Image (cartoon, rainbow over all chains, first blue to last red; front, side, top):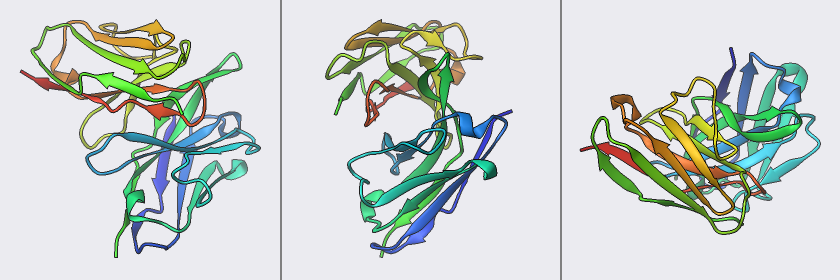
Length: 122
Length: 107
């Protein structure tokens, strides 16, 4: 069974840094792209970043580009999101999710963690 | 960036009703579209991918259709457990984008 467990969220001041982790099990981690999606309180879903299975390629939303860095440690089955220069508008529940791929084609996010809350406030 | 527009933003329906939610992309995305269901306090759950392919384990009363710029999610015979918020998402190109959501409430 696929499991994704996020951690590392918390309350930080504007300008601070935070590193989120997503520990996974139940599938061959290094074979799948992984993504982060966030949801501000009472708002909709916002895609944040994605990393390829081997970690060679990363993609970011404009809202976090230059401040967030996505990486992965495949032997440890763990995904990391380093968040620097945090702003109040980064306050959200951060979900990690696995990309569904079949026949060499990747589609949607088929498994999600339960999320970790990041609050940026002075 | 590709903008995704969902309508309506909310709707009221009764158990047993047929519900249709629409999603429009600001440019053609072929069939690179997914639908998710989210209940309060829970993570999103995948329902449909590739516009019309049902995620494993999802009840057959859910169906997706469309291609290009216009898509629909249909729930036949709405059940009590279907009251939730639904989101569409394009994955044709980065940055991936979600629609604003449709909240399905009990009438």
